Length: 193
Image (cartoon, rainbow, N blue to C red; front, side, top):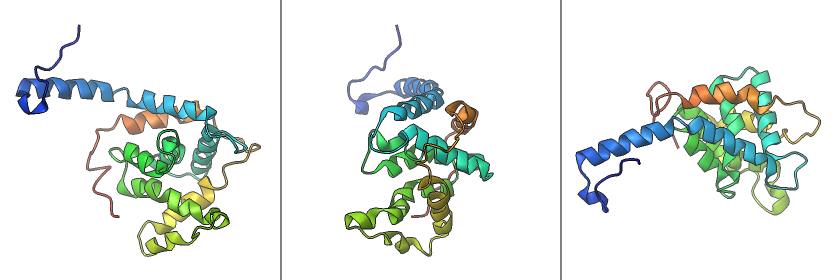
């Protein structure tokens, strides 16, 4: 039987209660890489209409990043950039960035958070949208990196003939990123908006 806190309302919790919860949350966080990998695997059976599954797309994007010799944070970001599609189809980029934010540098978080808007450049005009909406960030220091992420890794990764690396190839990278201490100042800070 597991231990539980003494309160029914948080305002009545004790120091011991919150130490217990902190211990529990830290233990749970150790399994984050497993849950991320499981969520990625589920993308193999979602969102029909594309010539490859969402997992296939993610693997292609990450493979392109790896073959271009991007750093590990960017490779994992390319792998996870659409992980939010399942639960947040209209703000998936924000969800993916939120998952990564405690473990990667602000530039990577910003790229992932903005990739949806930058990706619009390739198609939204066909639906009556403004393909140049990303231009409002033209002077942002990570504009070019985000445009490159989309041009070189994201928008071109729907090719059923492209030979992407399997998920197992990326698993050690995912595990290393999510094994980091969250919010470690070496990796994170408040991102520039």
